Length: 454
Ligand code: GAP
Image (cartoon, rainbow, N blue to C red; front, side):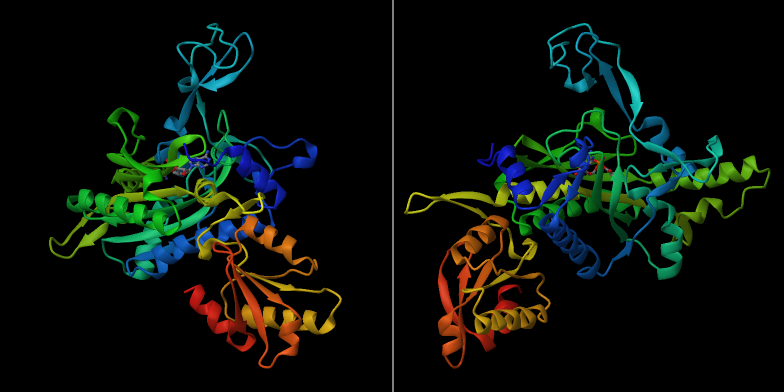
């Protein structure tokens, strides 16, 4: 187990405004969380790093933002309506409701009773109705994975971009699952975000690309600050594979609750594109229309060598944003003993993930010249585009350092009397991790930080 505990993270996240329970003032909605002023920055930074590595840095991936509300037919043909279930068991004695895999030696983990109901399949999808009249035909779902939006827009993306395999479509967005037992803070929740890539490859190359993406994803998580020794890659046992998968690697991270899944890298074969092609044919038949002779090639690619259409295989790295946030917080949380006996809490986040990049602190809040210089410095640093710059005008430098250590701000800039007296003007720059301070010319600050955040 890592040294960081869940209690330490929950407490820091609430105290400093990273994560709050949804509907907190009314007792809270279970399994649903809101991201506060700093949480939204951290989450956006993690998503931006993923998007950059997938869509901007590669030449073979396009982006997409598909809808959350999903046509029922899509989730019928994807297999989710029939198979996206968890077995649910009730304890007749204490009324505890649990997933069947949470039963310990045939006993309820809450009261120890063996008087349990038979497992019943419980579909995890949230159902709703589109339009004013609730009926079978108006049923829609909140998507349980972002992937289906990618599969159903496959043809539009291919037609509009002229892509040939291997190529991918990347998407970040909300997914919803009515988890029977949401738990462990933001680890298992009912509303969450996924960062998913569907990478389409010729069927003969599937295993090569599966290995490739497993390795890429491990590398990326390390760039987000996770230590390799805290990540385990596990090949999912055949009997535990999802209904669409030929093979899956799970990346496990050493969370405060032990090793648990952070990301899955699945080989989804031609399952989804194949089923949606079949779906279109079925609907044409039901409408007594002769199936379009093109139907089988609708969700397919043209092979220039064989001059034939084929359904590509799909390799899918799929990561949860909340689990990513929890992992980087777990890794970054540090308590250090200072020489004066005090404990310093410091969030050693990778700089690109830090919610605030630089805090500018005027030594005195009632000294107009000092305050003005701090405002000017903030404005000049904002122009560099490195991210959020905070102006800390509490008038207490020690307190500001403590606060910014706790929220992971990599640098604090302090404007003091020397700053306004000297020419050229200088300020103190303090490094979060080493606590070392150096004087830097004000005119050099934009370049100094641009280099630091490269
Ligand atoms: N499209 C494939 C897919 O959805 P999954 O293994 O069910 O596969 C992928 O989910 C990732 O989404 C998981 O590795 C996890 O990080 C995240 N995830 C899944 N269910 C979650 C939940 N209830 N709460 C938070 N994250 C979840």
